[in-house]
Image (cartoon, rainbow, N blue to C red):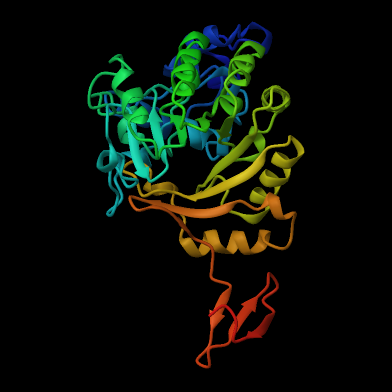
Length: 374
């Protein structure tokens, strides 16, 4: 008698046509070990991590994202991003809960004003999938409710009032959590109130729904976004396996309604920290008309440090992209701090002792430009 794999002896695994609309998919997210076993062979380490995360870090996985996981390989890059791991329960020696300074620059319950002309608008603490590498892991997944100063249900009026009272603010980024967990009516309400402020020129939405649950990007949602242009959407593909026909169609719907789509990846150990994977990712994004925008060096967040690479490893990947592929396929490599985003790529302009400027190209060739750029 042969053993039955765990994922065949568990809660039934629904077929894609049975997932339902996005609201039903949100309600049917995988949130228990029994449900997860319908999709993957849960290892003893994964099971222990899930049990130990209870009451500390939330986890949930959409059916679409679960369908991308290798059921037999615990090192699958999709599993590493979605299934809790024991490493996240051991904080790194230099890790902090807020390396980007959200709490330092908080002005209202939802508004973070770090840069002179733009603000982060923290819409919600809820996500369709709680990514294990989240920069706001402490804020968005701690079940003690550490995200907002006051409850998420508090009125938005003080937040809109702060933005309206600061005419220097021309750019508002809606993030969280994922803003698109709200129903269309609530999203329209937020956009309408921001558009009523004359000095708000650009609205950006940070959302991983195109990757995690593409069905959320409905024609109705796209029409709401189109009605409040200019609206941009920054999404978050980390691995070429995430670029599916469904996610490509979601991005296409946004683009056809005039919403530019850019991608912000995070450099993650074991997920995308090699040149072949990163090259496949950025080339795959161009094929679905999504511009690679940022490559973030993984933040040293409590519960996330095990995903960090060295800066040298990140720079090596960038040097193997720059000059060797289409220019706009190369994201900007940045390190985020409470001082803002710091460019992390190597320096290619040097001044020698005589005051001459030297440049170095992608092949390591150097040229003296003479006493310029003084």
